[in-house]
Length: 135
Image (cartoon, rainbow, N blue to C red; front, side, top):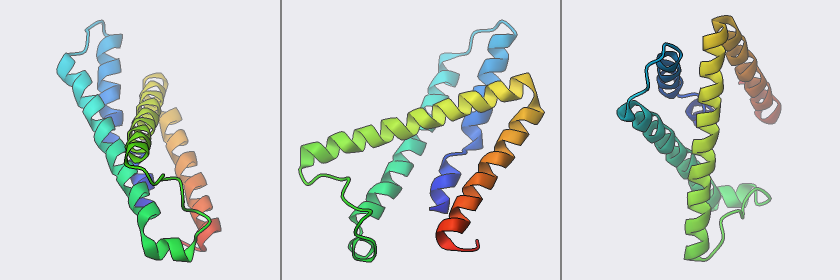
């Protein structure tokens, strides 16, 4: 679960988005390579997030331990492919939105970004502690 939270904050995507927005603020259009790099970063992170969730859902031992969590992956191959694509798109879109928001916060005031990051991680750690006991 901790790995999943780390994939939600890949600093590379945030910094790339910040650099693109900074260029646009200065009046220069971003290159196609820079835009492609951000999207590739988001897609690979989305794929990693999908794989972690997929493996968690299909692990027989974890299914026996907590059966109420499992079952979002359908049985059919076509349906599994659709869910797989949707999971990657959803995770990638979330990352792009979070990266864009973080980059905008850094453009406005870097202290706002630091405050956002501290609050976000604190809420996450409180949730982990509540669910699993002390970290």
